Length: 189
Image (cartoon, rainbow, N blue to C red; front, side, top):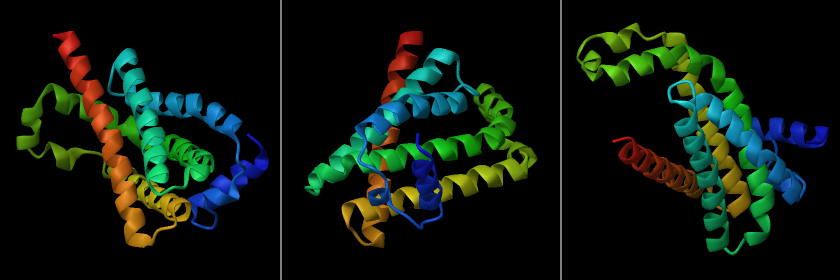
């Protein structure tokens, strides 16, 4: 990815540039898709076996693509999809990389909770590493704000509309993750 695209991505992360400032490059989208899947897989693989983690990573990235396509097509802005995907994928990769450390700190605790949900009835949550919890929460809020910002610029909507679009995009991703997790759990049993 050219240096100019990296610089623009960093400026999108701090709300100084938008997807329209990125080049129209289907080639960049094709390059970013596997990278986004890899970074997302790294996060999921901390708590899941490799294959389910890969399926969840692909579902997550696919949800990003489908949501952007749907939202922008619905608003008759199909011509903005490529730049929007470059923005969403590149910022998503950046946030994924930033989440690696706090997620790795929390992963053993999440695995313990999954194995023994009764721990939630105790004060186990208070024993979680609070720095890692705050880092994950802060990064996720920042990522959501950046996603809303990208959709505001790409779809030409106001702030509340962009929050709605970011929520819609998140819902698409969560539905796909739920479907993959449900299909995966029925295949195991």
